[in-house]
Length: 212
Image (tube, rainbow, N blue to C red; front, side, top):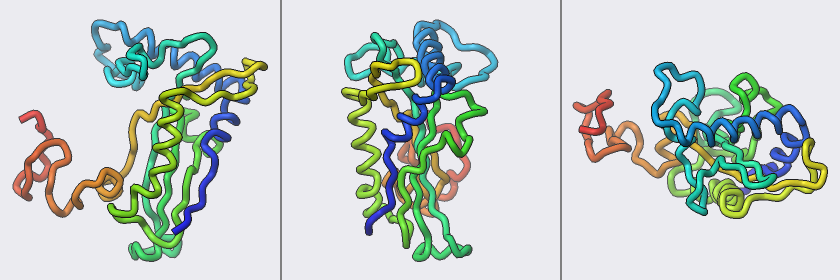
């Protein structure tokens, strides 16, 4: 079925048209690049940059992704998927699916404001299953593939009247247990199949020591 979709590049353009948000993205990139050379991690984490994951990401050229090159601006995002029923209840046949994206390069108190969250796609009429889910995720995959490899040039931003290139990095997809299985192509949670290792069966329910 056809989905209702909004332009992701328009969302980024609106964000970069605000001087405060563009500055936040620049500061996040600089902090992430500085953290990439850190030898130890802080005892108390106050930001996602205190972990190893984001600072250690390398771009397609093998260099740190958040190392700014010229006026290029690397930006981190997180996607979210879930299904909901407009009429209430749990009938998936009457449900809708929604893909949304937020900018991780913004401070936490700004990330989840309605004006800073991009509703990328509404899937009307039903919640997609594992088989049909790939069709709807093709759009964000293509968007982030382009933004990751070559970037997207904007003709004008708040701080760059002559334009600049924005590089996209999708750091994660957030979803509950049911939606995670659908998006990732995993078995349903009732199958008691771990998505991190090869353990199966209800007797292993609740275990978190996936290294073992």
